[in-house]
Amino acid sequence: MRRIALGDALAAALAGAFGYLARFGSERSASESIYLWAVLLLPLVWVASMLVARSYEERFLWVGPDEFRRVFFAAVMLLAGVGTLSWALQLEVARGFVVITLPLATVLTLALRYGNRQRLHRERGQGRYQQTTLLVGHRNAVAALDEQMDREKYHGYRVVGVCLPTDQQNPGADAFNGLPVLGGLTEVADVVARYEVDTVAVLPCPELDGPALRRLGWELEKTRAELLLAPAVTEIVGPRVRIRPVCGLPLLHMERPELKGVRRLTKVAFDRTAAGLGVLFLLPVLLGLALAIKLTSSGPVFFRQERVGRGGRTFSMLKFRSMVVGADRMVDALAAQSDGNEVLFKHKSDPRVTRIGRVIRRYSLDELPQLFNVLRGDMSLVGPRPPLPSEVERYGFDMHRRFLVKPGLTGLWQVSGRSDLSWDDSVRIDVRYVENWSLTFDFMILWKTVGAVLRGSGAY
Image (cartoon, rainbow, N blue to C red; front, top):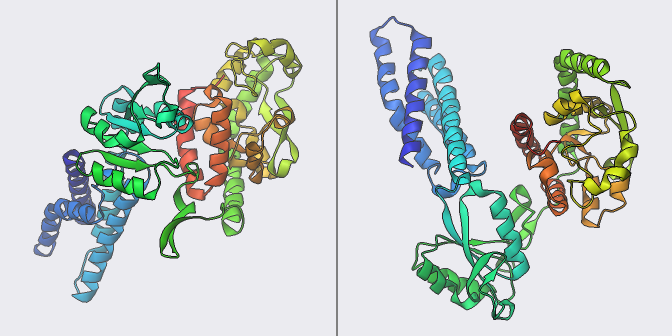
C-alpha cells in the first residue's frame, strides 16, 4: 500500500510541475506564486482524494477494474471540488493549469498502478506473494475451483488442502485431486487455525446452509482468514447481478443479458466503424501479406470456409490462406495426430501449413481479412469463435447459447489460451462471454488481444 501511495504522490507531483511549466512557462509573477503552492500541495491532496475514494483498500487492488474506477472517481471528485470552490468563492483559477494537471495526474496514476499490477502478477505466477487457500465443499465443485485457481495463478491463491463432507472422503486415502483432505465440513475453523490458512473458499452445498455459513463466519473472525463464498451461478458476474430485498431477505437478482436495444446498436456501429478504419489503416499490411502468400505457395490468396454465426445461420468466413490447397479435405487422415480438444482439430506441427502460413498463424495475421466479414455484418470484432457446421453437430445444450451473439474476430477464447484450452474450458468461456456481454467487456478483450497476439501463445 505504501508503494502505491508513494507512486500516486509522485504522479501528482510530476503532473503539477508539468502543468505549471506548460501554463506559466519560466516567467514568474506574484499572482502566479500561489500555483507554486498548489504544485507542492497537490501530492497530499491527490493521495487524500484516493483515500476518500477507497482506492487503497486491498479488496479493490490487483485484480479487476474496481481499482481503476476508483482512481478515476477520485480525479473527477477533485476536479468537481476545485470547480465548486472557485465558483463559490469567486476565485480566478487558471483553467489551463487545472485542465492540464488533473488529467495528466490521472493518466500517470493509472499507468503506475497498472505497472504495479503487472509486476505483482508476474511474481505471483512464479509462486511468490501467494495466499494459502482452503477449499470447502463437494468433490466436483472443489475440483473445478482448484483447476480454475491453478489456471489463473496470478490471482495469488495457493490451495493447500480441502475440506469435504464425511461421506465423500475415501477412508483409505488422505488426498483428493492431488490435494490433502484436511478435515470435514464441520472442522473448517480448526483446520484454518491449525494450518494458518489465509483464505477459505466455500462452494455451494446443502450442508453449509445459511445458519451454518453464519456460524462459520463468526468462527473465522477469531482468525486472520478471509471468507470467500462462491455463488451457484459462478459464470454470471458483474453488472448482471444485483442484491435486492425480497420479503425481507437479501436475494441475488440476475438481470437478462444485454443482447438487445441501444447497446447492441452501439456495438454494431462501433464494429463497422472500427473495421472500416482498420481496413484503411492496415491496407499496406494486407496487400503485403497477400503478395507474400501468392509468391511463396500456389493457390488463391484467400481461404473461404462456411462457418455458423448468430442464430445458427451460416456465412462464408474469409482468411488469408495459410495451408496448402485442399487442406480441409486432409483432416480425416490427420485426426489421430490431433493436439486439440475433443471437438476441435488442432496440430502443433501441422504438415498442411505453408512456410509463410506458420508466421501469419502465430501472430493471427491470417484472421485480418475477417474485418470484411465484420463490415458485411456476419461477424463482430469481439465474440465467440465462429464454429464449423461439423462442430455444431456435436454441441451440447449449453454451447448453443453462443448463437445469441455474432461470432468475433477476437474473443475470450483468443485471450485465454486459444488452442491450448480443453473443450470444457472453451464451452465455459464462450457461455461466459454471452452471459456477461457489455461494451466495457468488449473493450477489455480488445486490449488483452494485443498482448495475446504478440505472445503467440496457443496459436498453431
